Image (spheres, rainbow over the protein chains, first blue to last red):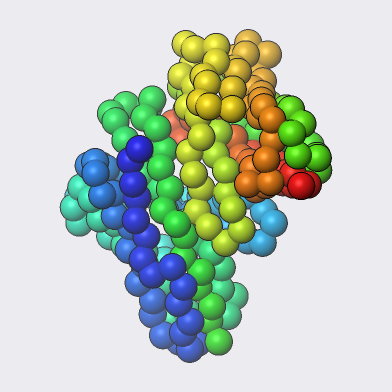
Length: 117
Length: 109
C-alpha cells in the first residue's frame, strides 16, 4: 500500500523554540495533505488541510500563526509549531489522500510526539 | 454536521472469538468509509476502504460492510488474535474526513 512518512517521530524542545515536522508521501503525489492533533484517549482533531502550492485551510480555533503549514511540493508538507509552549505538547499526525476527487484512500504517517518543556 | 459514533468504546474478548465493531454516521451523503487501526503511540493504518457504491470489502480475517441508507458500517474480525489488540477507528468522507472516537479492542490470550 501507499506509504506516508512523518519525521521526527519524537521531539523534545524547550518552551519558546520552534519545531518543524515533515510529512512525505513516498510513492504517490498528494495535492492535499491533512494535519491532525490527537490528545490521549481521544480521536483525531483536524487542524488544517494543506494544499500544494497554495495556503493551507485551517479549522476553526486553530491559530494560523502558531501552526505554520507549507506544502511546497506534491510529496512534502511541513508543520511548524512556532514559539512552542507546554500546552502544545501533543501527538501530531499527517495524512494524505491518494487519487483524485473525493474517493481516494487516506494514508497516515506514523505520528510525531511533541513534548515542550 | 456529520457525526460519527463507534460502539462499544472498549471491548475485551478471549483469543479465537469472532467479533463485530460498529460505526454509525448521521449524514448518508458520503463518498466512502474507511476503517483504521491505531496502535499506542503510532499513526493510523488503513484496513479497509469501502466506496459509497459498495456494500462490503474483505481483507484476510477482516470484513467491513456498509449500509449507507441506515448510516451504519460494521467491521467483522474473525478468529481474533492478541495481535489484533489496538484501537479501531472508522472515518467517513464527504468534503472532508470525519472520524469516530474509536473502539479499543483487547484480545486476551
